[in-house]
Length: 207
Image 1 (cartoon, one colour):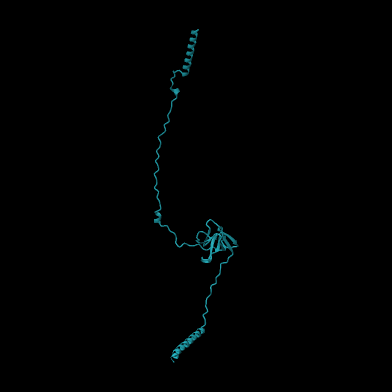
Image 2 (tube, rainbow, N blue to C red):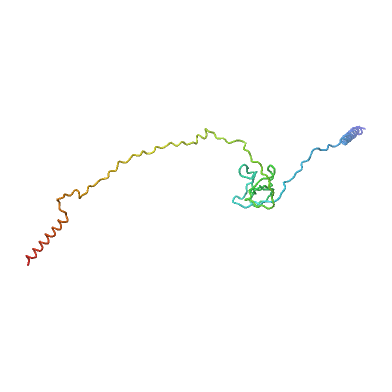
């Protein structure tokens, strides 16, 4: 008798629990499922029209920029030599090549044509706008004044005029000679005649 008194509550609990679970399943089956509304985004890739092969250079890599130029476009990555990536387009002049570069805004980037070997017929694409700096660089006048070096003017040497040049003058010797003075040549000739005359007298006496 005691065994049945113990089993009856257990059986009733099992039956009541089964009925409760069956009721919940019927209620949930009567509620229509919710169909999600809204558009599912479609992932589309960048159309590839060619490929570029990074050429070997001294650095071993090539810079990838956000736009076709070194001014106004920052470096956003690099590609190593020998790497091949899809090409999307080119500039009108053909100096820059647009490549597929996942992980950046728009999924495209730019690389200079001399750094790659291009294959395929690439269309012309419009370049993106240049990056506008957030702040305009200004020069602090107080800081700039510390680097200004003022050069003191040096005094130029004074110029002293030289004394006047005195040119000596010489008088003519002929004007100084006395009119009564015999010429030197005549004196020499006279002495020679006297000498010859003395030699002649000495010769005659010796005979």
